[in-house]
Amino acid sequence: MATEAHTEEGSALVFHPLDQFIVKPLFGDGPVQWYTPTNVTLWMALAVLAIVALFVIGTRGRAIVPTRVQSVAEVMYGFVYKMIEDVTGHDGVKYFPYIMTLFLFILFGNFLGLLPKSFTTTSHIAVTAVLGFGVFFVVTAIGFIKHGFHFLGLFWMSDAPLILRPIIAIIEVISYFVRPVSHSIRLAGNIMAGHAVIKVFAGFAAIAAISPVSVAAITAIYGLEVLVAFIQAYVFTILTCVYLKDALHPGH
Amino acid sequence: MSTETTATDAAHGAAQVSACVNEHGSAIGMPQLCADWMPNQVFWLIVTLVVIFLVLSRIALPRIGAVLAERRGTITNDLAAAEELKQKAVEAEKAYNDALAAAKLEANKIVADARAAIQKELDAATATADAQISAKAAESEARISEIRAGAMEAVTEVAKDTAKELVAALGGKADARAVTSAVTARLKG
Image (cartoon, rainbow over all chains, first blue to last red; front, top):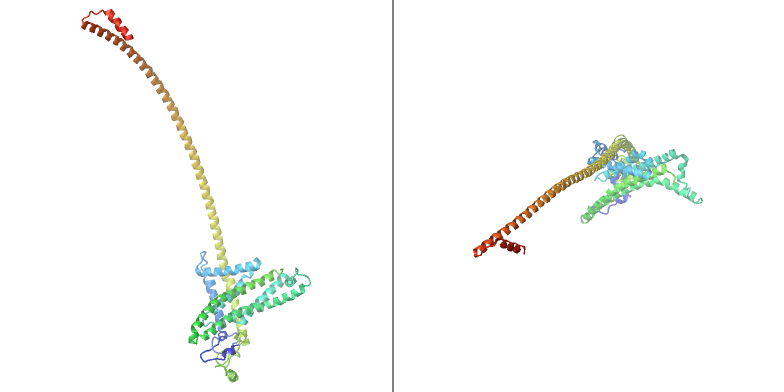
């Protein structure tokens, strides 16, 4: 994919739309071991710092009448809390810190990735797959712990005609196991595609004649990406809530 | 620029730090699919998630939850207090209206009493005045009739005298009795 981009048509046009996703060690040029501090580490740490700034430093006044930063934190808290309550019901609320962690990590990963020269941690399938499969395994475990064997009733439509039930069960099982894949690829794919498109338009900016069009297109796509950054965090979170609801209330 | 990558791939085996980056620092294939980098990403992701989770569950979320609960409590209390004050205001208004109605009733009673008393006095005074007036009128009438009688007598006297004088003046010898009867007859007529 990237090798195609490397075949230059002219010396002015240089496309490396995927170079922004390269993982580099922060110090030196050594190989990337599992423990090496890399740009992944840096941008995840920045997300942590931003979350701490917003949620810990911003709320340290514990004001009844909130400051601006505190009210942003409260709005995010209320947003996710209400989402869990609406989708999973009241017994889902005890998983609130976990879901909030996922939401904030993805949200800040997406938005920090929109800064120029940044590294977008959520554009990597390795990252989103850990998130997606993590949700899958945890939710499945919760389902079996809460309901034991009855959790498999999720796949057995007792209100469908008897002949159709095995077929529906097969479809349900397949769709259940596809969930983590779509869950993680949706996020990484959206973020990666948007960033790559911006980079491609940026490559065209080198040609003076079309650079105004290119800059306008970058601006437009950037606006879209701001939207996508929030929507993908929202979608990931609400799907997590839906899966959790299936685990808590497997009856249809 | 990188078309010769394949040619030099083997040559810079020592310099190349990753199978996913060529000698210009550009990506070979999708960096997302580079297996060399995945353990690193997964490791730091787990560290990050654990840190975020601890920060949120230990500090941030209980704090915000407490603030929101406190605010809700304050608002509920304020609303209850406002409701109570409103109730008090309604009660006060009712008391005021009651007092006003009682005062009005009292005032009406006082006015009626005063009016009755005045009426009584007035009636008494009127009766006295009427009695006095009728007494005075009777007295005056008596006087008037007395005066009228006196006047009649005087007129007769004067007429007789005048007639006698006139007769004397005209040279006649006045017969007193004739004159008197003539005058009397005249006066009667």
